[in-house]
Image 1 (cartoon, rainbow, N blue to C red):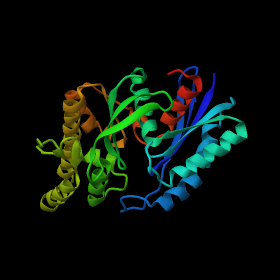
Image 2 (tube, rainbow, N blue to C red):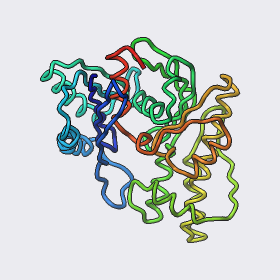
Image 3 (cartoon, rainbow, N blue to C red):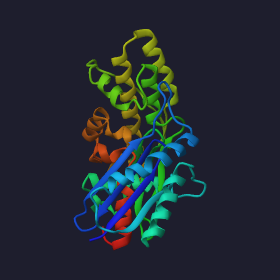
Image 4 (cartoon, rainbow, N blue to C red):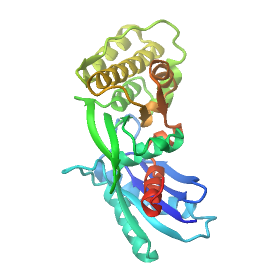
Length: 313
């Protein structure tokens, strides 16, 4: 048995996880970065500060009842595995991982945040058998709205090619901006979903999708008009989620038209929304990350580290 430590310091969540290579179990600890009421995001300098403060306490909690030596450390050091992909917040996790690796004499593995998201989704959807095959993964959050064709890569395990994306706002940004407009606290996804579930009238929206690329910013103005004219939080929330769902569904169809049908896995915080998930499940043969593995987390990093350490999925 080997324990693999995963660390991820993304733009909105500090997280760490342990993957057990024998029973393939994962335990994780994570904490959202604090965002001031009424604001829709956080500056990178503030994110770095809060990660530096939160990560040691989360690691202490993670190892509270663990007496087995960590054999490897696996960390996300970049948003994507491509030239120029960089965010300062990931340097906190990378620095901590390097220090722990050196202190323990443990192997150090680096992954992208994108790869970690996909791995966590496969794990929680019980679809690790897709590793080694071609599939489509959608990562939909406040920081990303992308469709990715995933193939197997000998060194990095997952080879990712972006084939669909937003041209402006990310889906999570549209949801959060709508929620802040309605007076909700950031991040707004869960509260917006509660409001939307109470709206029972039929909704029709036409997504702005050209090829495999979508545009979401124009509908933000539409949502402002809907709320200004109706003063109806329930209807406004429902329209916001319906537009995101319709956009993702149309992009998926366009990808299939270009590249052929293949298994599709949905991950990212937005994909934990029950309304969006139910609609996409009815439309496609799709797999979804469980909510605790769908939002930003270190579980995917720990899993990828385990695969690289053992050479087995």
